[in-house]
Length: 115
Length: 114
Image (tube, rainbow over all chains, first blue to last red; front, side, top):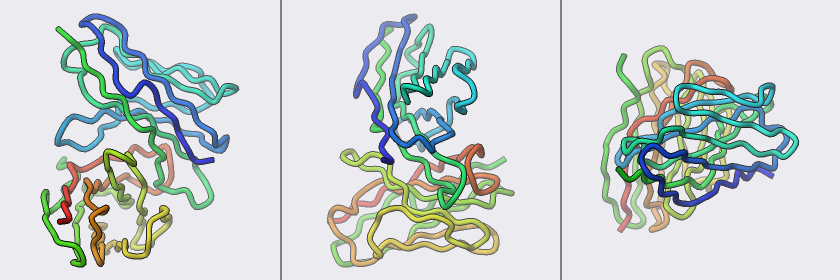
């Protein structure tokens, strides 16, 4: 019930291409969906987040698409750059009850952008 | 503004020992969460503290414990270490407890259990 499934596990994209990472969740109580980027030796850093009252959110080259009925959300990275090469995690949480502070993470996607 | 700091950055322990990890949140942040990151299990929530109170706990054995001090700094302790406890332990702070508050992660403490 608490799982978040992320795909693909790894992704190779050419510079300038579009990177797409997908996540699916089970718990309909989730109401906050952030994406994190992690470089080797660093902690995860928030990229962009969405709440289920909107279907899309864009910040620069990063866009989250959200499909509440399908319980799926995805990250699109436009004009991918070699500097985007990192591990990306989707996550979900719900606000209320005893769920404070708990993010449930997907398994991560290793993105490699070739020059 | 300084980010989340974690000490030590690296630790090597042997089975059966215990270990204490420290986390200093961003100034003004009152909520601190801890996560364990391993290649096999990914990022898993350990517990969350707010105003010195544990508000939430993940599915980990009682060997994992934590506390938060009045200045919001937090420590986590793992007793009777097992090989499977080898992991990157991440601390994250946010302004207040609850969602919609961005969690800022520290660089982590890499624990190796031999």
